[in-house]
Image 1 (cartoon, helix red, strand yellow):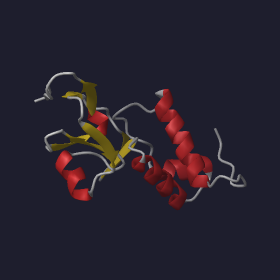
Image 2 (tube, rainbow, N blue to C red):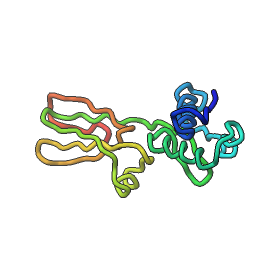
Image 3 (spheres, rainbow, N blue to C red):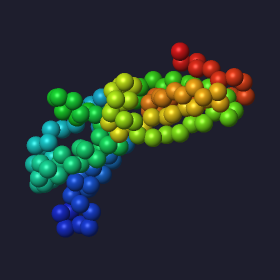
Image 4 (tube, one colour):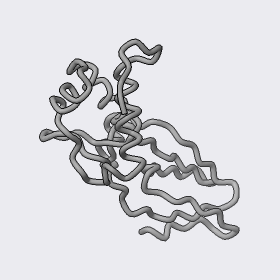
Length: 143
């Protein structure tokens, strides 16, 4: 895999594509730390800024998380199954910063907003929720 600096697609997007492909193929596994920025700079002959922009793209997609000591492939948490009754509305959106912190979700992960027919609203991380349609009253089997 190579990066073409003369291509129509920006270098940072090409690098994001390469890293994404490695994640999707399993070469980079959940929880595995990604190589340091210097590795990509040396391997592909690109700028540190391009590497940082590529990492930001992947973080925004929710594929990786970045902490003090580098970036890692995001691990899929155990999903909770939520039963919803007929008439319940489910919408998806990006969370606000306080919602993201409250729910403990990585940057780039959307939330599901579940509004019951009686008006109660719940917010759940989209990467850890399974929505199950029910013909009975709404229950939350996850707890």
